[in-house]
Amino acid sequence: MAKGLALGLALLGTTLASGEAAAQRDPLGGQFGVIEVALSPAEAARDVDLMAESLGKLAPQRPGVVDTYVLTASFWNEPVFENEASQAAAILASRYDAADRTVVLSAGRGARAQRIFPQASPNNFNAALGRIAKVMDPKEDLLVVFVTSHGGQDGAVALQEQGRVGGALRPLHLRTSLQQAGIQTKLVIISACFSGHFILPFSNPDTVVLTAAAADKTSFGCEPSRDWTFFGDALFNHAMRGGDGVIAAFEQARGIISGWEGDMHGTWQAKPQSLRAREPEPLASNPQVAIGDNAMSVIAKAESYGNAVACAAHLSFALDRAKTGRPLKGLADANTLTSALSSATTRATTQGETRGRSAQDTARAIAASSTKALQLYQGQQDYVTAHATSCMGA
Image (cartoon, rainbow, N blue to C red; front, side, top):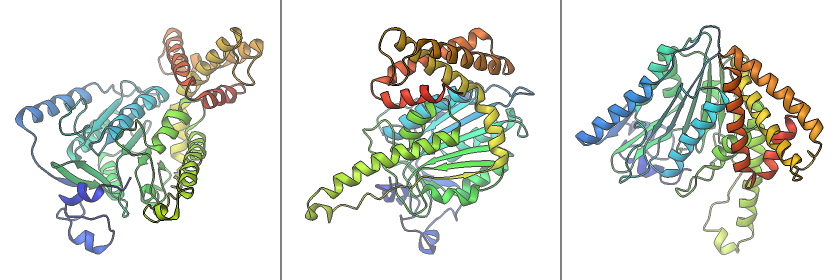
């Protein structure tokens, strides 16, 4: 994902290299910001409208309920990053019962594509944090922040709209913005090369942080034609669609990524030496995690309803397959599936009631998630089956 970052940061006067030389060329003195060419009046007005609409829809927190607020941002103006930010937001909103508490920001899809999300500018990013902080209870609720872009060797996440915006989000920038907003409990997810730089600054009891790569490693899958990066695809599109907790999902994602990267390395290794000499060896990205105990306690409460819904949905799909003579592997006993589905549905309904969701609301959520499992099954048979199997004893 480091490819092209030099262009994105050229406006800011930084380079891909880390160290004092790059810092001395930073006209912002290390502060969170960008060098920016103004939008046209019509574009600027539209961005204000989009931002006002997004923040105006945020529902207030409910006393006694662990509400989750989700902020996702694609900071590089290529389709893969906007796709990832928007689709991850939908999955997170479902998992954390946060459909009316989610904001998506984007650098766009390219110079000629009309914006459908507010600009992922530093001001809009901080405004979203500020508004979320105003409507949430920082002592009770959870914030999930997900950002996706290219990344530099010094841990900088690039902010780029080609020819118009150049800058970076560094770990200290994000930590400072969260502290200034007064947000306490956080799940921070960073999809970028060298994103392991975010681990140490966010290693505290009130934060769980997941990164796509170690501090000295690149990550993969950021070609503009893709719907997801490797990390986003494995974590959100595969692992987090099941009923396991976020750390279990992250470990599943690591295994998925390892397989994909192993295939990449095998392809590279099979090339003639003359070609390998011209291409960097695709080394394992080694995604990282830091777990704060206080944060995990809150996250477990925040995701319990969504996880129960996901389990009921996958078991419902498995039962339908068993009844029609097309069972998932190892899940052919309709009576056993019926019992497991009843238990999962009761758990989801009970969890929903504590969140103000009626039994009908929960039934609709289960049905929608089951339909999604059906849609995913053709391309993810093994993963959908594994999700259903893991829910049998939940």
